[in-house]
Image (cartoon, rainbow, N blue to C red; front, side):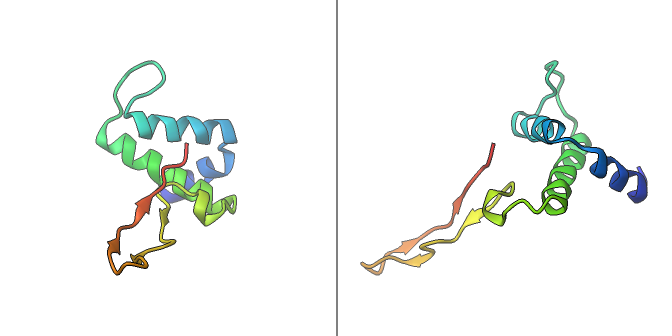
Length: 88
């Protein structure tokens, strides 16, 4: 798919289609139960990320957002890890 056609598709995505793509990537299958191929999953994820950027989705609401609040050491000097927040 050319980049121009891909961009046109992103422009025409509705919020419902966006949610459907997110669900498909999350589950690894289409609503009818057929598995997404690796290429389909990659293209869907790219569409999701571009949709979020185009529609100014808040960074903390974006797919794969990593919550870095509290990252580093806690008050006792123990390291705390990043928390990945998956948004449905």
